[in-house]
Picture 1 (cartoon, rainbow, N blue to C red):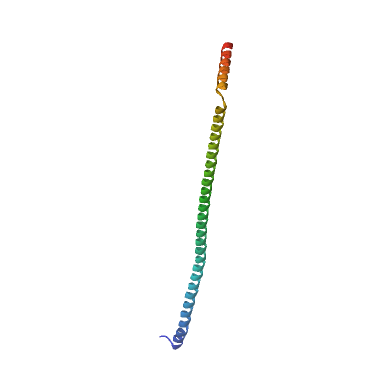
Picture 2 (picture 1 turned 180 degrees about the vertical axis):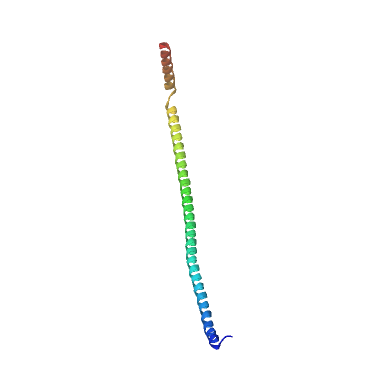
Length: 127
């Protein structure tokens, strides 16, 4: 049989044990909260880095698109200048030839042909 003293001591120690258990649970809860907070920081940093990488990818894509568009425009300008230069060259050549041909009189043409034939006969005679 238990004595009154033992009962009083048990009644006195019971709230202490409950308080210790509550304090231990509270400490465990706080440690878990701190651990979760640290995890949230890492998660936040990881998400931030992910967003930074996405922004970097978008920036690089836009730079590549801008470069491509600039190259297309420069290629177009080069092709346009080349076409204009070729047209001007061909037109100028035709214009000079036409004016030279118009400037040759029939007598000059006959004399030139006769001179060429004479030169060809002289070359043929040497061989």
